[in-house]
Image (cartoon, rainbow, N blue to C red; front, side):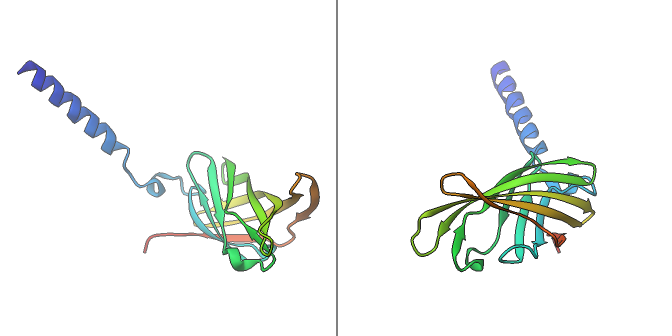
Amino acid sequence: MRHSTHVSAIVITALVMAFAGCTNAQTRAAPDSIVGVWVVQDPNAPFPLHMYTFNGDGTMQQANPDAGDSRSSDSDGKGIWVAKGAQVTGKWVEITADRASHLLTGRTEVSFRFTVDGDRLTGTETAHFYNEHGKLTSSFEGHSEMVGARVKLP
């Protein structure tokens, strides 16, 4: 009987601890937190709309339609970010390939600086383009401001 009570107590404790971590991260984020999913307008890119996801652990993902560039195919961007108040800096990287030959053409590294104001973000970016051998071939500093809107539940 003592063994059964002890096992029951352990199971109940484990369940309580497991369910305590199952909450909506968006409701826990500070008002100016970048954590969440965003639709970002990037007038500097070949295709102007992107999806950015910022995770609470400082990682992020970027995606846009692959068919947005008729010459080059690119992977989703994966990256990192840090926040100091409403200011967010980060970097993501994508791999590129030639659409016709299907060969590696290089990678793109995009550094960004955003300011978050509730459900809106604004900022700038700098892109560096590397060939398939890892040599920097060109750089681009965005002159137009990027604007993003947080994806929210209805």
